[in-house]
Length: 340
Image 1: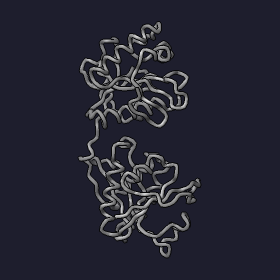
Image 2 (image 1 turned 180 degrees about the vertical axis):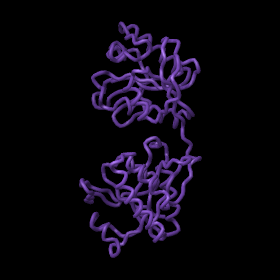
Image 3 (image 1 turned 90 degrees about the vertical axis):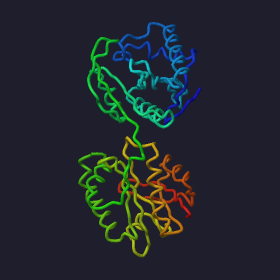
Image 4 (image 1 turned 45 degrees about the vertical axis):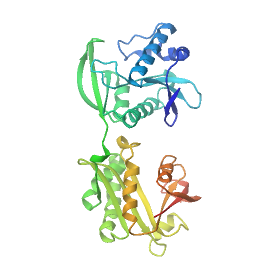
């Protein structure tokens, strides 16, 4: 039974009829090398017993390490999910991926999806993960998924040391949202460049220019920034464009209507799919509500997750097929409008 999905994968409860497919990775010594004591399943019957154990866990807690299914092939390509098999009885992330599917980013995609399900649907506050000290691939997956290293500890079940990782559910209510100033330039450049130093200096100049406009023409230009403590986790802007005054806009995008446009939305990877983009956009709309009766947002037609978010907030599609030229790319765009 399907429980949820991500871009390329479906997440389903297990059935004993899945044992043969699961044996492809449970019985693979390479896949099992850094899991538990590193011993692969010896036969399909042992996998069936594991599935029975997972189903019992689901009946007790309402979640499990789910079967992950490739949407294109409709085949099981691994297992990923949450369990309470540890002594502390706290939610723990675990996963195995079929060896032929390694190197495609499926482990990271599945981990992020399971974390989001745990936080947003099961309302968990913390999730842990453990991995062998030499399992560098899993360490990379955990760190990409937002986990931080807590400590190295001895795990008596396997009689060796492991790394203990942890991730906590960020609380949107604790975020501080403020309008941008020149003091926020470096933080914004760092977030936009994803800490890529080669792009950081370039974006410093971009945000200096943007935030100067916020101070010089505050009735025409603004940015909102969301901070978690001292860490910038999102920013989003709004600007009024007129073709007589903003030639830069109309050189890039021809013949769009003049007016207020939402622009420059960025959310830190660890905060994506947690409602932050929606929250900071509502803040922009509230600010605009006293300044205009209508605003627009122009997006690439490839932004398949962002477009539904705006439509859910009440934006309607005005037109599509616009040519959007960037420095290195050319894409078709979608124009959405919002009536206050």
